[in-house]
Amino acid sequence: MRPEYPYNASSTARLDTADTEFARDVYTGLRASQKMIPAKYLYDEVGSALFEAITLLPEYGLTRAERRLLEACVDEMVLSLSPVAAVAELGSGSGLKTQGILEAITTYQDEVEYFAIDVSSRSLQDCCDHLGTIPGVRAHPLRASYLGGLDRVRQRRPVDGRLLLLFLGSSIGNFSEDEMRVFLKSVRRNLQTGDALLLGTDLVKPADQLLSAYDDAAGVTAAFNLNLLSRLNRELDGNSQLRNFRHEARWREDRNRIEMHLVAKEPQSVTIPGAGCQASFQAGESIWTEACQKFTLEGLRQVASETGFSPLYQWVDAKWPFAENLWLVS
Image (cartoon, rainbow, N blue to C red; front, side, top):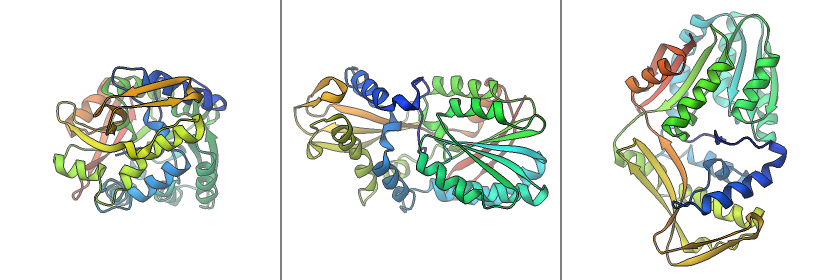
């Protein structure tokens, strides 16, 4: 439903200029006709902790659905791909969902390389410290954007053997439809014939079920969204008043996506010196902070064929409509 650490496909700035990139994206986004800030900025240390809490909420079924699916399909997947020389994961986060995959692989072979790709140094360290204890797993942390990390994997992977790329949690849903296709084609260019992609995708479901997942009764998702304003204040010296904004989730049936917005309760002006900008709001005007695309099974198969992949398996959870898609590089 949401990625652990989202990535803006259009961003080319290096990680060591992240503060400048944040300021630039805020400046550009708040000057747009529909004010927006890229979703990746929701995930600072506070936001990431709030997101972990969201995954435990009864309204949020995605994480539990994906874990059930991975447990159910892992042996079939590994046997169909074996042997696997290397596993790489985009947005690895804690790596908890990946443990079962690596354990299954090392059941059938002696060793495997694992490349964790994430923008969070702390998450990378925790992930590799944990997964590196699995016998036969050599874990390598790569602090990078999705495509930047995948390019480094391409240069370091074993010369011979299959690579299994993991992109879990329906992180792909944070791209627009056009961005998604561009991104997947870029992923394909970094892979070799015979490699595989395991793609987690949240499926279309009733609107009320989706809206409650993005606006839970306990208000955790609201706090997660409003924390973005706190980040503007902390890191860019902004003067946003959180009490003057409210969290709102919107279902766009015409686009099959959920949107999250921060809506101004009253007319106001916000100054953000660190981004060199001032933004004025009318009552009801919003900052668009996240879009989460929902998919259909047939639509996913079509996307695979359009971006250079051949669908091999598609597993669907029975309790929460969610699909794991195993695609081969064709």
